Length: 379
Image (cartoon, rainbow, N blue to C red; front, side, top):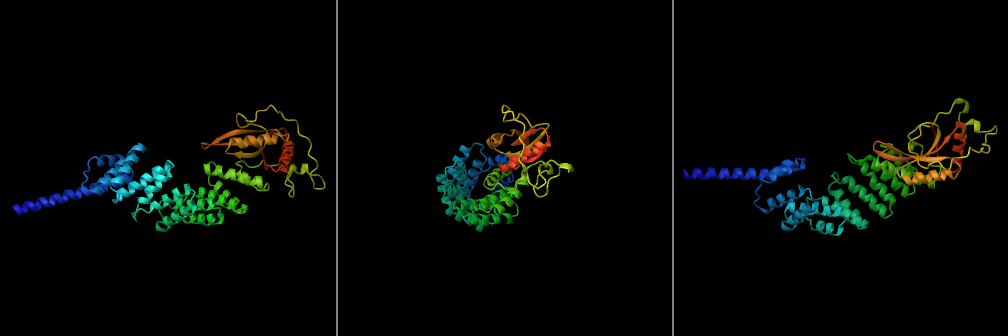
């Protein structure tokens, strides 16, 4: 009878032990699935009995802290107290990320070098980030490639490939950057607009204007009001300053004003027939009415009526103001206005208003002769 009681007690202890181990596993599951309140409640009931369990409890206690300084203190304590446990090693990784966010690369690097667990492949990616910030591009590439070799579809795969490309750009190996970016498009899910922006940049730096323009256009047309689109726009205008013939008409959100049949554009010149003489040449452009130099350079709102030429749309207000003043120096009226759309702000440059469509055409020729692309809009 006594022996039976001992056996029953042993089974009860094993059952409690199994439940205890299950609770530790449940904590990790709750945290990974975003159930942080439940994880925090369970955390208070756990009774760790060995180093790995103590490390696990301290690790998740740190991750559940809302204060970064408190979290970092606990992570460092866990890493120092239980350095060879799985969660002690993970604590080193998480603490290193905090230091990277604070741009303290030396402390981040010291922690990452202490990680020796083969299961923590992510350490190679974060080591690459540190080396990149330290301008050690060769080491950044080597570590990012190690990460991709060990975890080709890992959660940092896209970031690792972009980092490799950026490091090649840092080395001025632009074709290598293009080759690295081609691997991004093979991933199952990736940020397409950012990919095209970076691809366009690599081609631009490699002095391949055609491929750069194609990539920038692909990216821009995915979402015309994102930050990536604004970055693309800035690069395109910079490219046009070096190559004035670059066609950027796809940037404009409005359709050009339809010209009436009696003043249809000449197919060879792209100008209204009324401005082309019988020999097929453009005669001297008559003077336009004088402009009001006292007109504000920045309009309080988008115009509501009149003929205008839209000469640019910028994500930086200073660029819009500079172009407006430059057009005024050409004896043409010009201003810009602030346009807010889809929670994004841009600044649109307009030449005008002009009294007639003929005046608008004359002004457009003057802008074209000064290598400023524009198109007619009527409000």
